[in-house]
Each structure stands twice: as C-alpha cells, then as structure tokens.
Length: 345
Image 1 (cartoon, rainbow, N blue to C red):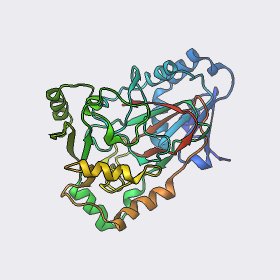
Image 2: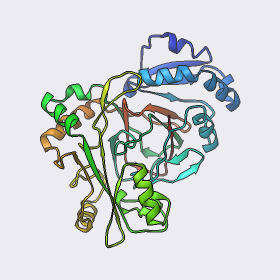
Image 3: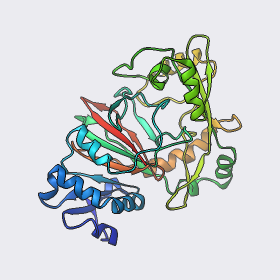
C-alpha cells in the first residue's frame, strides 16, 4: 500500500523519468523508481543521479532516507559508481564493531555476523567520535526468507524520554568498552559474536604499536591484555546536533550494548563464556561508569519498537539513510544474502 505523496518542489526537480512514493510500511523513507526505460541503462542513470545530487541530498535529509528501486544496479561496481557521486566519509572503518571486510573501493560487506542473529537498530558507528553522516546499502542478493534491513526514525526519541532521563544521558555522555580477541590471521565467513574477531583483523595490522597509533587517532584508549587480546575504551556524546536540521538527536548504543545484553538468535552461553574471560567486559555505560536501569532502557526500546519498519527487499535495491535521523538493523534470515554498504559524507 502506497501513501499519497505530496509533490514537493524537490520531488518535482527529480524530473519525469522517475516516480516517487512512500509505502506505508516503510515510512518515513521515499521510494524512487524509473518511470520509463531511459534510466534502466547504467550510464544514463549515473548521469541522472549526478545531475540531481543536490536534490537527492535534500530528500535524504527531509525523509530520513531514500530507496532507489528498479535502476540498473546489479553489481558491486554499479553500486560503487552510484556511491561515488556522493562525498566520501572522511574516516574509515578501522577498529569498527561489525565483522566485515572491504570489497572494492568504498564498498564493504554489510556484516558477517551469523544469519540467526537479529541486529538491533543502531546508528552506524555510534560508538565512535567520527561517524558517517549517511550510509548506503545495496541488496545484491536478497535472502530467500527474512534478512530485511529494518529501520526506525529517531527524530522524536529524545522528546519521548522523561526529562530526568534525557538530562542524565545528555550530561554524562557515554563510555564504550569493546574487546577484540588475540590475533587470528583471518576473518571467518560467519562470526557468532563481534568480540571473537582478532584485533589484527579489526585494525588491519599485526603491529601493536600501529594499533596504539590508530587508537590515538580515533580517541580510543587501548588496553593490552596478558592473553594477547585487546580492550578499547572511548567516550562520546550521547546527544548530537544534526548539521542540517539543527535538531538534537540521540546517538548511542547505551540502551542496547550492555555487559549482559544478548542478541536475539545468539546462544547466551557464548556471552557468558566471553564475559568470564574479559577483564573489562564489553558494554556501553554512562560517562560516570553507571549503566541505565532496565526501566530506563524500556523508554528507548518502546519508542524504537513503535517506529520500526521493514519491507521485502528486491535484488538491486539501494537505500541511502541519514545516519543520525534513521537507524538500521537486520532481521535473521535463511538462505544466502549479500548486502553491501558504503559510508558517505
């Protein structure tokens, strides 16, 4: 079911070669599809997207994101060409949380986290001081069952919190603790938990001094453990101001990434064994070292549950999200799935 779409000046400037609609189940995103055959050829599509980049920028900000469907994006190179018309994220994914590798250029795997795990809604790189303003997703191969990339608008989240909790989060900020295993030499094809990656894989080097240098660049405090593993600690603001809208937005994993948190589909025994071996267990805390109470967590999760949307992906779909206004996650799936990402400026 499609919602009636008011044709704004920005939508009109996309031209007559496309149609736009807002499916009810995937609000708030704007879907853009070719109206005829002209943009089903890659060179014409890339030229069209390039010439309307400024309009696409405005629509991504206004709607929280866009989905480009039915265009000739079938291979990684096609997706890379589309991502290439946008500014590149002024950073990288070295020391990032997700188990993923670079594919080509700025295109990376979405994740190698086990297909049975539900990835909760999050802002990309919410645990880092430097983060991509936008994130693009390309569904090269849609899973046979499940695997939807879930989304949720967080534009009203702070206002939905009790005033005392909102002030508490804004005042204290966030401290994140993450653990990496001893060097492993490679990234397994399927990773049951993010803490099981070797630090050599996450930081793309086997040199401890180089890791320490990379951490210093990123505002991370490295703690080297006797068993060869690595713990990193960093502090970030929990509330940031959107550069275009000037709205204050919550950006943190504080409410989900706790010491005892368990992801749906993940064996609780894995978490227990990991935490037993970690001198400083992974988790996200208020800047004073405290955790949110279960009741405080509920204010966040209840809001996100109300805002969560998903729809059936199609091969070739490209979704570009405003990383501050709209969060993303992933449903468990069966079969094979190939979703690729690019961090955009």
